[in-house]
Length: 109
Image (cartoon, rainbow, N blue to C red; front, side):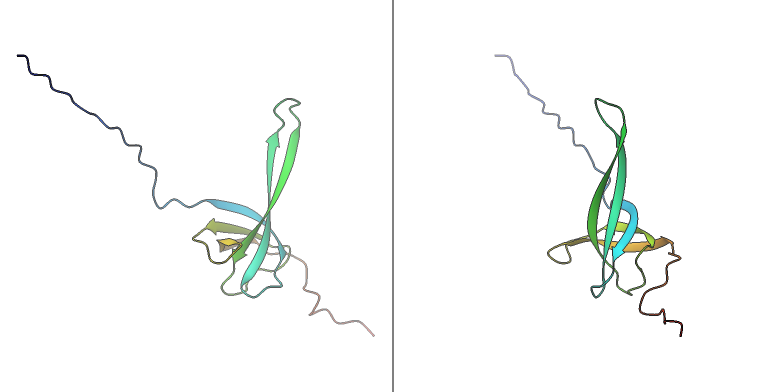
C-alpha cells in the first residue's frame, strides 16, 4: 500500500500590533471634567458625482489635565473604553485657539 501524507499549510496574517488610530480634529466642547468633544472632518470624493463631500463625526476624548480649550486643533488616539462614550484620549494639541474663554473676558466700563 502506498503511504499518503497530507501537509497542512496555514498562512497567518499578522496585523501590526500596538498600532492605534490617530485623528486630528477641532475641540467643540470642554465643559465636562477631563473630557473633550472633538469634531473630525473627513473629505471624500462622491462615488458618482466626483464632488468632494465633507463628513463630520464627533468623538469624546479623555483630557487628563484639562489643557484643551474650545477651538483648539488636537490629535486624539484610540484607546481602551474609558466610559460609555469615551474610546479616545488626547495625544497632543496641534494648534492653540486664538479665542479667549468667555469666563476670563471682563466687560469694559
